[in-house]
Amino acid sequence: MKLSTLLSSPTPSLSFEVFPPKTTDAYEDVSAAASAIAALSPSYMSVTYGAGGGTSEYTVAIAKGLQDTYGVPTLAHLSCISSTREEIHRQLDALKEAGIENILALRGDVPEGMSRDHLTYHYASELTREIADYGGFCIGGACYPEGHPESPNAKEDIRHLREKVQAGCEFLTTQMFFDNHILYNFLYRIREAGIHVPVVAGIMPVTNPKSIKRICAISGTALPQRFVRIVEHYGDNPEAMKQAGIAYATEQIIDLLANGVNAVHVYSMNKPDVAMQIKSNLSAILAP
Image 1: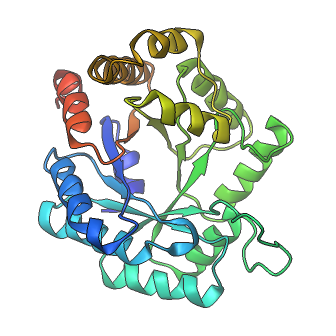
Image 2 (image 1 turned 180 degrees about the vertical axis):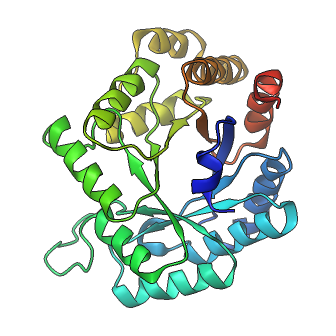
Image 3 (image 1 turned 180 degrees about the horizontal axis):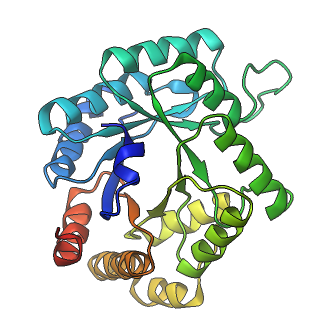
């Protein structure tokens, strides 16, 4: 199923992200975790793509396995920053052959020390246009409610986002955020700017306070004081932090759904138990 059809429905959707293994010996564990999440019957699942395409083979294999075994629509990530046009087309051929219809087109992080002078792709909009010209895929893109870390200001960020949509992006998935008002303000600004594709809210349940501080430092994601106090109070107790993190994410999702944000994508960090608890917490809310 193409996600443009699913996301245009008024029915709320709950989806989960998984990431492939970095090495072959970890493949079975990751595949088992992804399968356990797929067994929860999410609306769809996304499978990430390692820097420089290092996990591209696993991305395709896991996405195909989830679709074929569980009937769960999949969204394969594809990044381009260090790829040639030939490499991108080989990956598109592999995705097409695997029966995967949805791609999240990303620039990817620029590897340290890499010169941008001779890159084939500099922006996600260029990859989006390449995929659109190839044809046959539903294309999604990333957006940043608090602004892309490399954008000089919000106006410039939205201009580039509009270029991405004009290049063929049919829906957007947000970077994680911990204050829903940031998303609501962002949605107002992009709608005013003429961007009307569906926006999927990206939510990360925090179970490891050390990793979230590092991620936020890199991405520029703000931590509201209410959330900081939760981390400070429960961060040294893993089980309590896990429970609190799931509760906080659940509360965010309930508020989003109540305010008309019908599509939520959970960054599950390959943790089936976290995905299961969130799905359980929302069972009546998501019931047809």
